[in-house]
Length: 143
Image 1 (cartoon, rainbow, N blue to C red):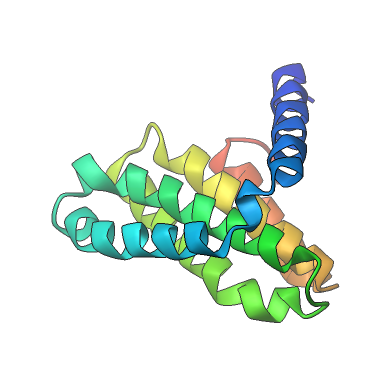
Image 2 (cartoon, rainbow, N blue to C red):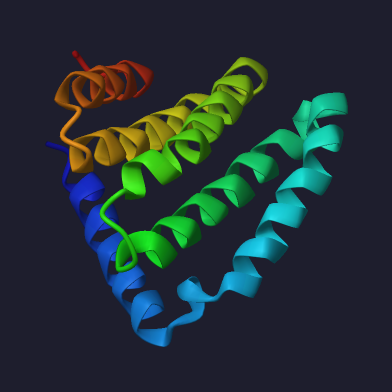
């Protein structure tokens, strides 16, 4: 295992914990504002993916994570409620991978891993494994 990936994952976990403690990721208004930003940027990303698609993928991931954290303590049906948001993120990252071979595959791998985690929470282990294998392939690792 690449040690730098472990460090990055540790950093992500620490950042998540800080944001959860701050309550900022649970703010409904911030989720609505992010949804509006994603919706506003989508047409520009379709017209000029080289300039806007990577930013759309990043904003969409922020929206997905904020929504997941918001739902985390509210329902056990999070996977059903969140599935379309994660699918949309994977679709956006697939588009980015077609337009930006340097950044796109890494972003796609990240969105596939995110969706794999959602499938795992829902005990949908087959789709979770499929997404994880696809993510490894995007990163050039053996699946």
